[in-house]
Image (spheres, helix red, strand yellow):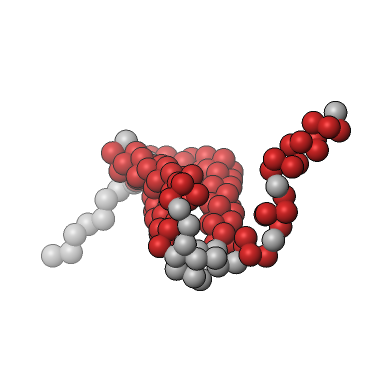
Length: 149
């Protein structure tokens, strides 16, 4: 068992990831090195566009859901475009913006945003839906305002 673990640790090469030069700006790299990150950024932008289209086309009758999904879709698109820009900076060799630390911050911010909006969707959306439905019923039966002449 220990032989397998030592072979795995040698193949992963943890020393490469623990070096300070890995996390700081290092200049240009090949597109093969950053392809996974550009692909991840494209998927994030695509998910943002899908949630935007869903919130515009299919959730017309629920303003609370729309109020929650529209900012989420915009934030996803911004994070994805930022990630693609960071990947292209790395390919082009821009010194400061080619650091892997920015990529880690982007992925952590993505996890935080998904967690925040997921929590709000589970915790607060049902209450807001009930409030909105009661408001619609109340609006339907309350007398309308008289127009001033």
